[in-house]
Structures are given as C-alpha cells and as structure tokens.
Length: 268
Image (cartoon, rainbow, N blue to C red; front, side):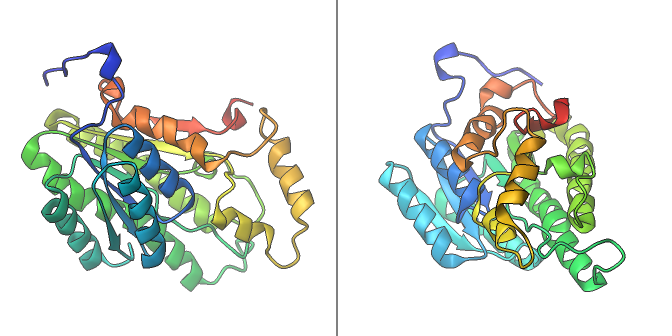
C-alpha cells in the first residue's frame, strides 16, 4: 500500500470524510461525533434512540458539517445494512466507522445466576452487532480501497474486574480478538481496524450502574477510582482525542491496536 501524503499541519484533518458512528445519541458516541465534526468530518449519527440521534445530528450541523440521524438497533442485521446504505446515499461516502453502540451488564449478576437470555442479549448487542457493522461498512470501504474502523471495547475485555460482569467481559474480549483479526484480513486492502478500551467514563449508562438497587454510589465510585492511577474516572469529551487519532492520517501506520484510554488502569 502507498502511504498517504503527510502535512504535519493536517494530520488530524478529516475534511471531506464521512463517519458513521453508532451509539451517537449520547455519552462517548456523542463526544466522538462532535469531536470529528470539529475537524471537518460529516457525521451519520446512529442510535437506537431516535430522539438522541437527532439531537447529536443537530449539534453537528451547528458546527457547519453535514449530518443525518439514523435509527438503528444493532441486534438486527437488516437495520445495520440499511444504516450503511442510508449513510452512503445521504452523505455520499463512508470513510470511517466508529462502533460505540453497546450495553453495560446491569444489573450485575454473578456468573452462576445470570439468565442465558441476558447473556445472549449482551453478546448480540456488543459483539455480534459490532461484527455486522464492521462487515457492512467494509463492503463499502473495500470498493474504495481505503477506510478506518474503530471499535469500542473496554478494560473489562482484558482483565476480570469482578462484580458480576461475565457477559460484558466476554463480549468485550471478543471485540478485542475480532479487531485484531479484521485488521490483518483487511490491512492489505486499505482498511485499518483498531479499538479503544476505556476505563469507567461518566456516561448515562454508567450513571445507571450507580443508581442500581443495592449499590452505594460513593463506595462504587471509590472502588473504581482506587484502581485508576490518575485517581478519577473519565469524562466523555476525553475519548474524542484518541478516536480522532485512530481515524486520521496521524495513525496511517496504526492497525490492530487495542488502545487503552484508562487513566493507567492496565499499567498497574
């Protein structure tokens, strides 16, 4: 593959590119959408919550970029296919895919108690949904010979944090393996595939965990931060920079990486 022309002043410039971002209606997905838009990217904001996706698209357009909102349940391959088709039809291209859509295992159930239906739901959304999104997006990117895919995994895909999140850990560990395999399969065809592994970030989903029945929110927060050397959990805006790096030409030689954005959690 021929390396891209680099101008140090434009390494992070996404002008003229189109990103499809799942889970864009709030939290990390919304932060990535707005961050990419600040650097010139047009955004297809996809989310199971149509109202939230619309809100993100409006905020992107306020930054001067084109944006559409697409309702999608990533458990449904037909909806994913339509999502990709609508992105290309409305915005003219698909250059970047960011798979943020996912669920936290909530309520936490110990491994011997979790219902198999709940296990299947988490795997379907987090792992199978990520794969089908990658598959459909790659079919577009392969025709162009270029693209960037960023999957969202977790520190829980690398370590066992305890506390009853076996299905979540399995789904995120699967995303890690999937990311590395896809990166090797598609590297010679111009598609880079990487993943971001955050620690706890203050998203609406995490707030839901803090509100879980029987949980002392102060004690839970203390437990989380005690394992993060920086001494705090992340704010959603702090995920936009790492994602921008992996999507841009600054990372043109980077593929197959699981990038921790974890305040030093995995360095302990």
